[in-house]
Length: 109
Image 1 (cartoon, rainbow, N blue to C red):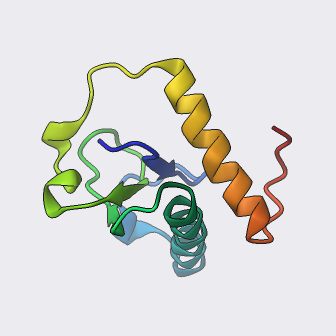
Image 2 (cartoon, rainbow, N blue to C red; image 1 turned 30 degrees about the horizontal axis):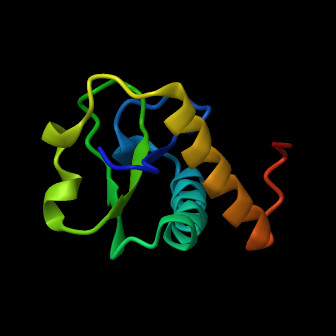
């Protein structure tokens, strides 16, 4: 939907986000907040938006999207395919910013 779009997905398979345990819900939003700060630093969007739709798959997940206008939050913008190198570059940029912000990602890139 936008360059740098990320998903926050819990290990627990919970279909509807309102059924999450409160602690897990808080954790997911904290993770989304950290990722949004990294996206903002990496891509300089006007805003970072969140979407919890729940229709794509029966597993709670939060979309975290760098945006410059409201229309960037439309699923109609979703690409039918994405170049693997673009995904890797965006992931690397987010990872670098998470590390710069002091987060231990547990991942070596």
